[in-house]
Image (tube, rainbow, N blue to C red; front, top):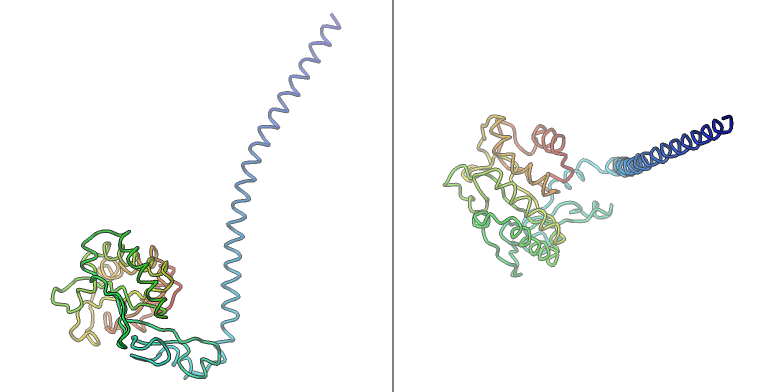
Length: 289
């Protein structure tokens, strides 16, 4: 009787140990999964942290560099030079950046822009491919084709030493007699944005950059330098800015051109709400304007 009791107790102890080991194994399994998730999270945090460090260093290093520039030199960077500058590819639209001898000595290069959007405009006898107009391309509703077409355009920009194409033009077809409607894609903001994103992605894959224009509400050619686009915030966001938003978020646009006109009495090029609050603050844009 005593021996049977000892044997039963021994068996129970073995069973308890086995149960305990099983629970430990299950716990280790769960811990392994948690550790894997923790490692992934740490990697993401590390990448984000490194990016923040890099951005911070860029800001820290950039501030003293900019501080040594005079107001005239800063104005020269912003102003650039007009058509057919001898500092870049002949016959192109403009150049910006290191356009003065002093700026060039600082190591700032002169960047080249070429008019678009339907191919490179070069008033120098050099040849470039003529692409179909924006409205015709949008009629295809073929986004992959559009992106592939502009990969070719990006390669041609590189071959001609052009840093950015001044296009796509993505203003809305608001008025049928607008003299530049042919450049633009559609009266529909979503269609416009999808094709704009395809162009910016394609050109970037080809090795160059697109400059999305004209930001914003530039919907007539007559008196485009002075006409005031009076528009509600809702209409502005849902119709006239939507294409630009898609180009930034889905096309990763890195260059945007403002329009000549004022919006609700405020010139677009100096409009803080447009170029900073919305463009950079809300959309996360990090490129040049």
